[in-house]
Length: 171
Image (cartoon, rainbow, N blue to C red; front, side, top):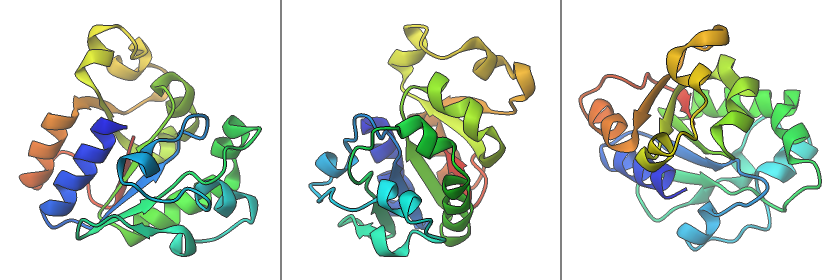
């Protein structure tokens, strides 16, 4: 969460329009980092089959950075993240921002379900050192075409105008 937040702020400060999505529906924390309410957010949008994130986006206090809090913790987070409603929201957010950054549960739980909509996976260096990144994500096996990079490398690439791709998701 700290890594995703830092990357989102860096991209926004570089002039990109950024949406930071708290997609860790089991243990949301982005609202705490930015001192925002978490009563309405991603969970609500998915449950009401919203076509766009507009009503749930919250100003972060950093220019160019909007936050989509998780909303209430649901009983079935994995089902919501795999839903067609989530896919619809992901597409809508990609059209609305230069970068959409998802703070997610551990990579092994999220990436296989969303790979068609994700350009890059940004990981905390400690997670890589501890062996928490599935090998199939790092080496591209199983149909994954994802690059794993640290937040620092992603921020440098974005500032240089390369590396992350425009209007696409970063997990």
